[in-house]
Amino acid sequence: MKLKVILVGNSEVGKTSIITQYTNQSFSEDYITTISSDKSFKKIEINNKQMQLEIWDTAGQEQFRSINTIFMKNTNIAILVYDVTNSKSFEELINWYNQVNDCNQNSSDLIFAVVGNKSDLYENQIVNKEEGESFCNKYKIDLFQETSAKDFECINKLFNDILLIYINKNINPKKEIENNNKNNENEGIDKKNEKNVNENDNNDRTQSISIDKKSFLKENTNSCAC
Ligand SMILES: Nc1nc2c(ncn2[C@@H]2O[C@H](COP(=O)(O)OP(=O)(O)OP(=O)(O)O)[C@@H](O)[C@H]2O)c(=O)[nH]1
Ligand SMILES: [Mg+2]
Image 1 (spheres, rainbow, N blue to C red):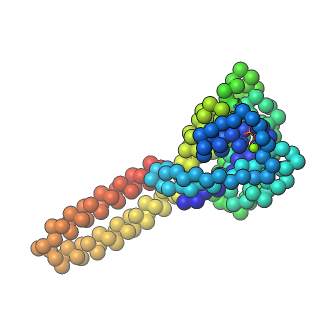
Image 2 (cartoon, protein in one colour):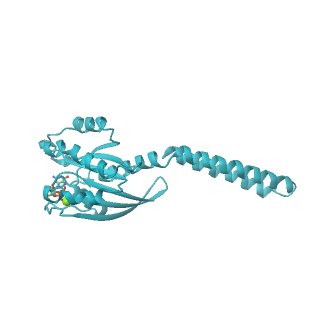
Image 3 (tube, rainbow, N blue to C red):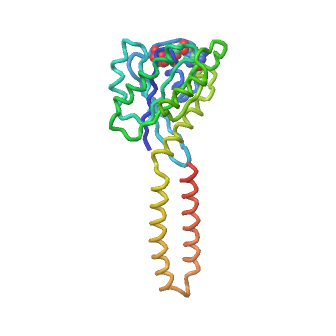
């Protein structure tokens, strides 16, 4: 499954740093502003599902922002980033939220996460966790996470959690179970007919039915748990 993930937020909040830590396990203290947009790739398996992530970094600086809208279309997961030591970056989160929504009006599967980055600078923290969470409640945002790209704190957790939420919301487990039930019913009828025809010599077949049932149950357990 291919997914487009986009990180947006004011300049210097740490979007590039979060992506670099996640995809390359590295961090730089130097600040090089993102001018246009960069794409990184990452393959990851979540709940037995292979995900191919296309992760888009965007420009936070005002003068480069207009170009962002080109890259925001067809987003599956949008990560809104602010800096916990910078209240302006938090106040302007709503603009990023609106912009991503505007660019994805026809999308039915777009989900959001809000990230308060630079949690290692807790002594200078201005925007507290409760404010971040209340923003998420207000706008029905799926996930809130504080991170430190510098300390590699909660970076993997952020991506794992939002991907799980995406799977839960958009790969309808009910639909999967219904389909599995239907297949299983049909299979059951076919096998029963087969069994009647070969009643005396089909120990193996009986076994294969029970194996099918087992794998059916296993699949359904996975679907429900994901
Ligand atoms: N202390 C601390 N510094 C960080 C953290 N994440 C990023 N930084 C620093 O903050 C500065 C900006 O980081 P970037 O990742 O370039 O910020 P950005 O959001 O991509 O900025 P633009 O590309 O201009 O939009 C850099 O100097 C980083 O080293 C963090 O978690 N903790
Ligand atoms: Mg950047």
